[in-house]
Length: 325
Ligand SMILES: NC(=O)c1ccc[n+]([C@@H]2O[C@H](COP(=O)([O-])OP(=O)(O)OC[C@H]3O[C@@H](n4cnc5c(N)ncnc54)[C@H](OP(=O)(O)O)[C@@H]3O)[C@@H](O)[C@H]2O)c1
Image 1 (spheres, protein in one colour):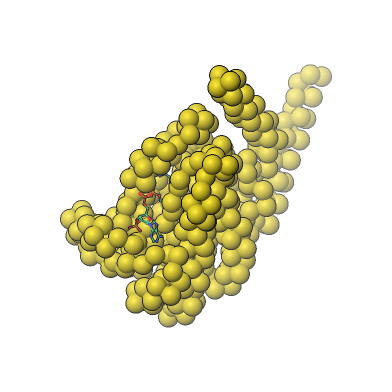
Image 2 (cartoon, helix red, strand yellow):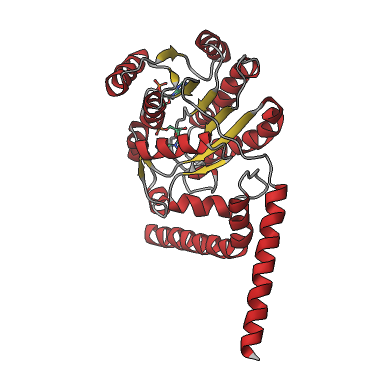
């Protein structure tokens, strides 16, 4: 009798799983896509340093025609030289501040039609909202969020009129602080959460043009920008951010490039990021029915895990405040 019940239960489980898989395979949208980069124009903002430079290096080594944009001409020249030395390929460099729409438009038009746009530039100055200067808050929103609008708006006409067509990509560099708010990151998190709204709506607007949006969520990554940020990080920010490990810029670049080439909307970069992405999948688009299956099955338990994280974080905050008294 017990054997019969186990067999019946296993059959039900199998039936339920297969039905769910078939259902998800039928409904997931947008449809799966591959975005090639070989011999195609990849334009990377913030490509003179850190993750952007690593991305430019990897894209060039995979045979892409790469353009990079940043403000500082000296660092752009250095990046160009280091990419030439490591890949033997020349990249085009453009000096512009993403906050200046006219300058961005001019650079993008000079660069020529873009197949893959990577909006990677970003600034991060952690501090509690109450003490952070209002200009610094605006600076982060302007560079991270408004600057990304400028890049996309400048690049879209050319991307839409590419003669060869073929799938295009707009990849946007967010952060794990764009998936969950962390102490000391009110302005930074707001700028990165904003990118998610931009990306979700944009994907619907450009799908008809065969353009595919990816949103990349790196954890702490060893870059010049991160080294600077670390000097100003409130102690509590470091304690809370430590729950996701840190990565090297090359590793993040590899994940980002693979993610955009697979047309993935959400691109996590490490193990913790994978779970964070599952836990925050919400109403975001999903192309893979297998990933959709994991999201559905894991939803309940991941909410419990998420609550455990909040329990741990608020515990650390209470302890910190107690010690400060
Ligand atoms: N490193 C991390 O721990 C981490 C974690 C999660 C997410 N991220 C995100 O990853 C991206 C890259 O970060 P990173 O650590 O590689 O930074 P990084 O080493 O500081 O490099 C930033 C790049 O952006 C450019 N840039 C900054 N402000 C700009 C502006 N107003 N206009 C045009 N270009 C500008 C910089 O060049 P110029 O200064 O010459 O303009 C540089 O090329 C950012 O979006 C960041 O938010 C980083």
